Length: 467
Image (cartoon, rainbow, N blue to C red; front, side, top):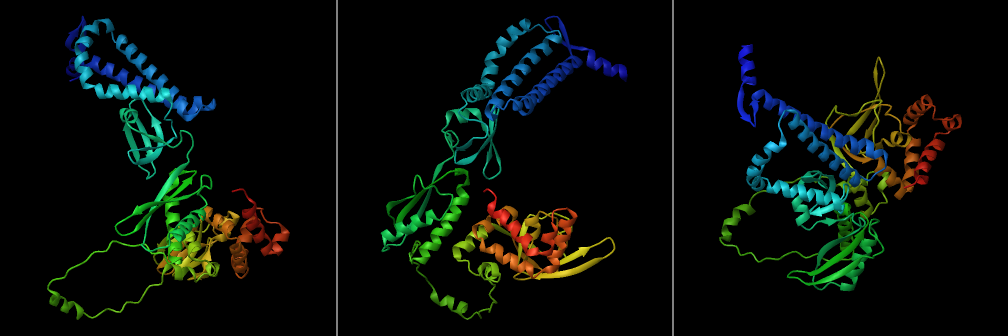
């Protein structure tokens, strides 16, 4: 059996310029070529992420240098590997020349991509990290290789683009000079509206969005007379064009609110409908109407919290944009004792039980119900949860993450005092957090005697920290 296998790998299959070519010889050549390829790839990553990084070379230049060095190593390695196996490259010249025409036609696309890749890397007009727009896709260049370019889109997917398409098509590079850009919002207004008021409302709405630049200022463009509306466009300029979906969403909320507040109508297409066999609809009229219990809106639920009694519609919209919602089933645990939580939780519906766990027992300390909130102390003090938080029934939570919670306190400082006053009535919660801070050595004796003092201290840190 061993002899038979040895014959398979060693018996010559054919001869090439006096060299006997066997199956074992072919496998050795393939193995060497694979080793050279892996070594070249490892060298590229090591140079790009380690060696060149220590010289503080930009991402794009590191990509260029590492790619050319890896390509050179691979080319030289392939030549050495072939010659090591006893093949004289000059003897292959005739064969390669004969196959050149066929190979050229078969690999012309690959060749074009290779040349385009070298062009992109050499010119440096598209660099790793640039924000580009290609065929209505917006994303960041993650990698420029010899054959293709990888773009991480705003949606999160990866777009693999052959280099020839980048060199032969129009590409918008938002980072070529800076990342500023213009956003256009088109809107239709009902005929008969006061155009001066419309212009004022649109410009005022743009001024309420902090991401909108004042220079160049927003502009309102009257596009023309549409079939059903007067067509307008609002032009705004922003520093980060990649945030277009979020900025546009916030601005549309504000525009709708201000148009409604000023009794400016947004028309809709109108159609005439002709009905035949009207008598057939009499049975529908006799169907008894079901009486449904209306559900409370999110606005009504948020007004149950003392924190938001004075919020207007725009402030509520801003609050909703900062948040997320989560449903918990009965007995489902939101967070366990000792874990760190990055959220401020408001209970829209349901009930949350706080359980103190020890090595021996589990004690139910208190309950949070509709209109109450928790999580502000672990966020402010950066401490783990002193209790396990578990739903006792189907519960709907309104969650604000740590970063947005700090932004909310900065935008509306009066919320800080309301939270402090609410906490002053929850002595059991304060005592648990004080105990944790004492164990961590972060609480002074004076602050232990006056809990409101250290609460105001941590809120003050939010207001004084740099944005």
